[in-house]
Image (cartoon, rainbow, N blue to C red):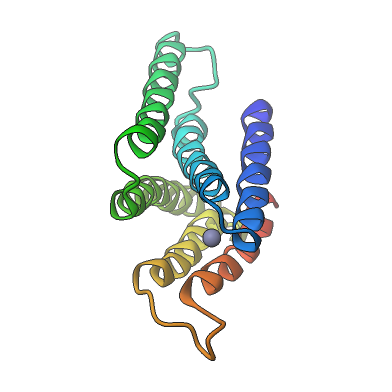
Length: 174
Ligand SMILES: [Zn+2]
């Protein structure tokens, strides 16, 4: 799985860097880069989750290699379609949010199931971590959905969402 985790790191770096740039310099191009990198990060999560859970990286049985190729084509196509729609048709905030939440919910459900099963089997606290981390992310994500006006004209729901993603990111790498 090493290669998949390395790409996960690169996509994560891109999304955090473009997010920092956008939140300090709000231009058309910086907004697009932030959204596309965030979309890539969420979709990459959806991509590698079933590869890890169902071990599609393994060569045997051979059907795994076929499923992996198929899943790769599906995810690359989804990302291309997503970016094309936003770039060439309509810069749609509601759709963008819905697409990211949908991809997030599916991978969080997969990790919760995986975590539950692994914990049942091993009874080790760390086996429950993925489930706890995605639960944390769902709570943080609710800040994105239940938006509110900035407190003291400064601290808004989106800034708290970003703050809330720091701990689960560090925890996840462990
Ligand atoms: Zn942001």
